[in-house]
Image (cartoon, rainbow, N blue to C red):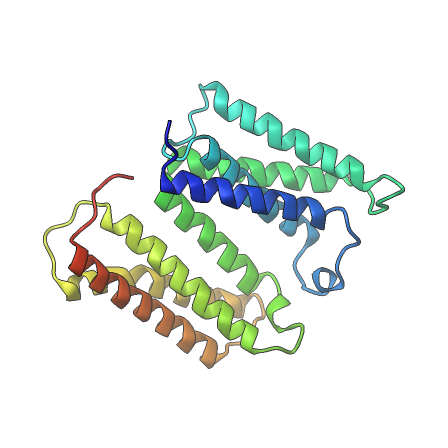
Length: 245
C-alpha cells in the first residue's frame, strides 16, 4: 500500500523526535534547561504531548482517536510503558539522573492530553491546537530564548512560530466550506485568527511577568501577514484545494 506524503512526513518526524528525546533524558540535565524558568514537569508534559501526537498520526494519519478501537489503547500502553521504562533507566547508576514518579505522571498527562485533542479534532485543527500550546509554553512559561543573550533568537522564534501557525490555520480554513471570495477575503481570514492569537500571547505574557518587546510583536505581525499573503497568492494561482481533512 503506498504511503501518502503526509504519512511520510509524520514517520520521518517520529524517527527523528523519539531518538532525540531518548538521548536528552539519558544525559545530564543541560544547564540551559535548568535556567530556562520552565518547570521540569511542564517539559515532561510537552515532550510526551508531542510524542503521542506524532505516534498516533503515524498509526492513523487521517482518523481521530476512537476509544472503542484497540489502536488507541495500544498507543497509550506503548508510550506509557516507554515513559515508565525511561524513568526507571534514569535511576540507573550509569545515568544517575534519578527516577521520579511525578515525572512519569507528567508524562502520562501529556499522553492523555494529546489523545484527548485527537479525540475531538482531525489533523489540521489538532496540529493548530498543539502548535498554539507550544508557542504559549515557550513564550510565557520559559525564558529560554533570552538566556544566552542572543536576542535575535527571540526574533527568529517569533517569525518562525507565527508564520507556521498562520500557514497551519490557512490549511485548515481552506478545507472548510466558504462562499466564493477573492484575494482580500482570503487575506482577512488568513490573518484574523493568528493575529488574535498573537495579541492573546502578548497579553497573557504580561500576566506571567514577561516584558513586552515591540520588535517581537512587530515581527510576529509581519510573519502573519507575509504567510497569509504568500498563501493567498499561491491558492489563487493553483485554485482552491479540496475539502479533504
